[in-house]
Image (tube, rainbow, N blue to C red; front, side, top):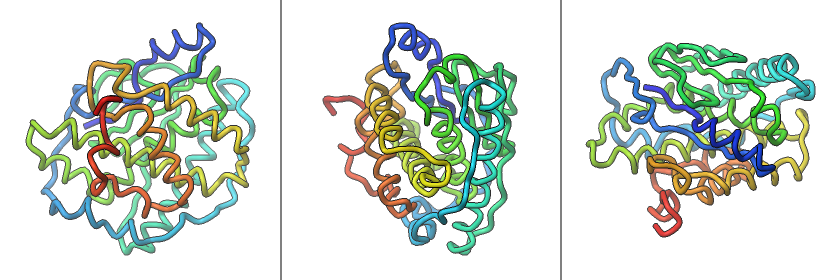
Length: 269
């Protein structure tokens, strides 16, 4: 199974038009790959994970140089990846859960991943090898300051879901419910990314304006801009990331108990 940020062609088009770069992702089904399925966890795992009761992520010192090109972006993302490892290891310890960091690969051109070919993606998480990939290319470098850090934090959010065995609940869903459940997973990963970015906002650092720019990008994305209804409308994508950011805690990220309207896939839903 893989999760990926998709539609890089659309991103490039918007950049060429001088518009905000969207943050759009693919679902496990759309990625066209499969992973070894483990023994399934109880469905209640996603609804009542101990991660929801761990409080705020630790405010770790997380210095990273400004992103000015591909090489500086790779260095900055590797540093941020180390902060993600430390922050989530502490959070899992509080939850009483075992944790092992993912493999992180920051690349400058599409590669064949452990879960298949790259496709139109900015970042991918492969659950079969617990490896995440983030692509640093010209479109990403021309985007808002927090674009690449948010891609990394989102893909890491999928690893958090995997290690906490929330993916097993997804695998239990019938085919007819896959897209609706996929939206809850994707929006939860957005929220978890927001919670982490909140924890490093003063040490990274970034401004309130940088955060507003990222949310503005996200409001222009979502299922209304694609063919697959697997991620939710742009307004909900921005809402869940901001919800995690304001709380700074996984407690804000239980999308599995959220009303249907909060995980809707189109503006009319």
